[in-house]
Image (cartoon, rainbow, N blue to C red; front, side, top):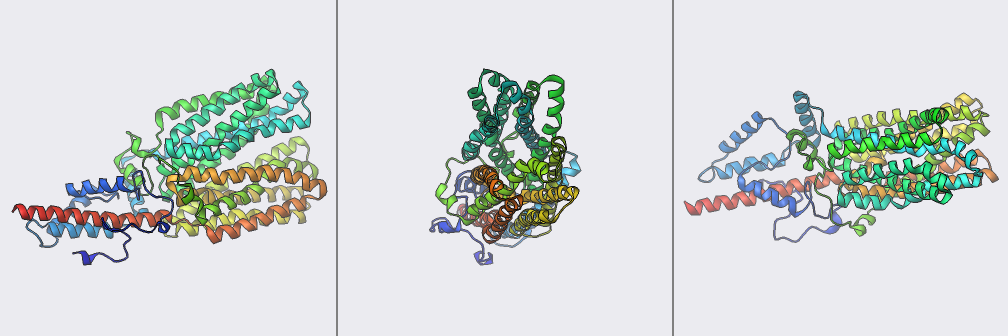
Length: 557
């Protein structure tokens, strides 16, 4: 019977030497789920002994019955047809459909039942968390004007207050990723939201106590927001199948963009009617309401959720690593992989241009386009709206391409190339444009194409190392934050000795470097290779266990 198995299956018979370490990617073992080591193997062994089907795809009861009938009548080896059942079961294992087909079948069953998928409830809660995240972040940029007038702060002090947020934000990127991967994303994201919400609400009290208290409070707020993104990445890596990954991440990140729009729109109204402290009280209280919903409805993985349907759980676990948190982080393995460094370098190159545009855009509108401050503030909202729309549009395109058979690697490279080359092209056009309206449109297009990165590098952490998605995002986002800090400071130096054209040229060069690095070293196929290897392991284990059962029965007879 063994000669019927294809030789290309990557598997290991118990007792043989393990596969070389270099052939693994970022899943060296531990935990459960696809490719998760001995814990998952023991589950498959028990299932094989019970004679159950070890596949994780979704199917109807009638089709399962038909397949079991086929298994009973296929072949004539053994006293009870065990060998025939064995061959049929192995054939089903090796010839099972792709993950995308299983996902489509599972979605069809959910639609028939009329249930709202629990995974999208988790995505919406993450979206609302990031909406609050940027609302609480941008309110200081508006409230700082009346605050500086009341407390007599000079521009240098204002800059110190604005930068204090990044002290905590930068320090907790990697720490937040480690915490999320080892403890679970639900706990970490819940902590982050409630922590930064309390810090936001305490801001007026800290400002009245003195500048040192305000700086510490803003740094504490950065601590809370710093762990949020790695925690979200960890949660979605366990809850969202690969066929829906781009659109779900795009929706969550669009919450950040819409949060900036909401904060910039409502902060002036609250300050005008109720005074500047009202901004921090009202925005901070929203986080408490969010946390009460999150604590009662969310779970770190579908395996922990008692309310999720069996069909949806099968759909999710067939394409994700919905297992337990990891116990240790293999830093040497992670940092030895070129795709990880492609993420880090590309994130730096991407955020350099993004942070410059978003930080210095009002100044550009005022100095170059001659808009007044009110007009500059209004036009600053336009890029955020454009990014929210184009991010979701790009996510839909990416998932459609994956569902139609295009490899994840190709899709990630296409989307991120648009996210790099699009802004580079539109920035080079600014020096040739004289019309303010065309300049604003060019800026909006630059940021709109930039948002395609949500389906490129921002989705890739879960592709290459789903069990360490939080740590990977913490590493790359640390580089991204450093790019924002250095890029913002370097822009001031360049403007003092040069022009805006020089500022844009530096950004364009980094966009091109990022494009080259990304297309040379990035990948999106680690999960697919892991799933193929696991299917081979499942097949061998079922063969061995069923042979043992058959031999035992023959001896008893």
